Image (tube, rainbow, N blue to C red; front, top):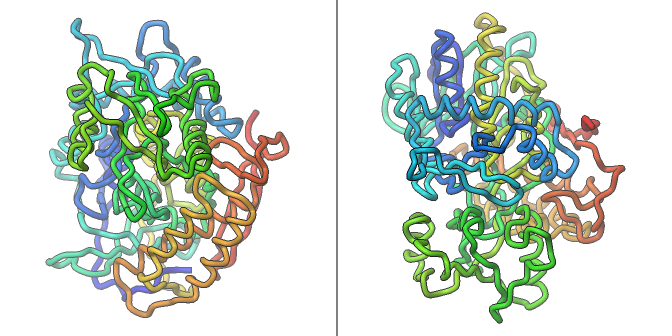
Length: 536
C-alpha cells in the first residue's frame, strides 16, 4: 500500500537519508558524518520546528553523586510497568552519561549551580536528582540550537526543509533504498521527488495530532510510523499513548497544540487541587503530585468525572522565583490571560508522547532491510507501557549514535528502486477534525470496549471518504487515519490496564498480558496482529 501521489519529478542522492530534525534526527546526521558519509537531512517544516525544541523537561542521566545507571534503570523499569526491554534499558542508562557529555561537547549549555556543577533536578518517577535542564524550562530549545549549529557547520549535510516524506522506495530484493517526498517551495526540487540512499533513517517524531488536544506541534502527524507501516515494517506498543497530566486548559473548543505546564513545575512543589482548593493526589500514590504521569493523568480524569469539571487546578503561587525558574510556562500563562503568581492555573490531560512506534532492535534496525528508526518514531522497548520523565531526549541521543555505528559497519551499495502496482490510498482532508475528536473521546485517557468500538465504527465511516487530489493535508490525514487504526486495534486487544493504557472495563494489570502487541500492514492493506514475549 502507498499514498496516492504524482510521479517523482526529480532525484536526489546521498549515502544516508535522515528524515526528521529533532534530537534523534540531528544527532544521527552528525554521528553518520563522523563515518565520512554524506547525509541528506529531510525535515517537514523548518529545521527547528519539531517536538524537541518544545521540550520543557530535561534529559535524564546518572551524572550526580550517589546516582548510578543501575538506579536509573530501576526507575525506568518501574515506570514501564513490566513491558520494557531490559537490554534496551540497560543500554539507555549505561550509554546515556557519555551521550550527554558528547552533547555538551557539541555546544549545549545546561543550567549550573553556583559552584559550577551541572544543576540536577528531580521529576516524577525518579528517586534521584538526575534531570539536566537548560534555561529553566527551555531544555529542548537549547538542545536543538546546539545540534543545529553543528549541522549547519557541516557542508556534507544537505538540509531540505518543507519536505513531507511520503513512502519508502524498495529495490528488487525488498530493501529500502530511499523515499519519495514532497517539497513545498520554489526551485528545482519543488513538488514530488525521490531521494535515493544506501540507508534510510526515520526520526519524524510523534503522532500527537491523532488526538484533538496535544502538546505536540502541528507537524507531528506520525508520517514516519505510517510510512514504515505501508512499507511492511512491524509497529508495536502503539496503545501506550502518554497523556501529559498538566496541560494548560484553553477551553472545550480548543484544537491542536496546547501549552505544556512542565512536570518540573510539580518537581519544584506545585500542587494539584480541585475546585474547592483541596489536594486530591494525597493518598493516590506515595509520591503524590510527583507520581508517574499515567497515575497523575488518571487521577485528574477521575476527579473531573467525579465533579463534572472540565479541568482541575495547579497551584504554583508558593513557589519562590517561579517566573525566573519557568519563563516559558510563565509566558504561556500570561499570554492566555492567567497570572500564575496570583491565580490558579487550569490544567487537563492532553496527548503528549507515544511510547510505541516502529519496532526496532538494539541498533535501530526495523524489520525491513535498509530502514532504521529512532526517537519517538521508534519502539526501542526502553519505555515499555509508560515513558519515564525525561528519558525521551536521552533515547534520541543514545540510539541515534548506535544507528550511525551500525550503518557505518554494514552499509550496502546503492540500489535502484523498482516500480510497484500496490494499491494507492488517499483520504479527504476534511475528515481530520472528526477523526481527532473521535479518538480523543473514545481512545484517550479513558478507554473501554464500548468507547473503542464506537470510535472504530466512526473511523470506518470516515475511511470511506476518499480523495483523488493529492496534497499535504490529504497525505497527513491519511497517515493519521492509519495510525488511529493501529492504536484502536491495540487498545481493543489489550484487555487490561497497564502503564498509560487504561481500560475502565479491565481495571487490573494482568500477568497474562505481559507481552507486546505487534501490528503489520501487508502490501494490499490488510492488517495482521502478533504477540512478542517481553524479556523478564
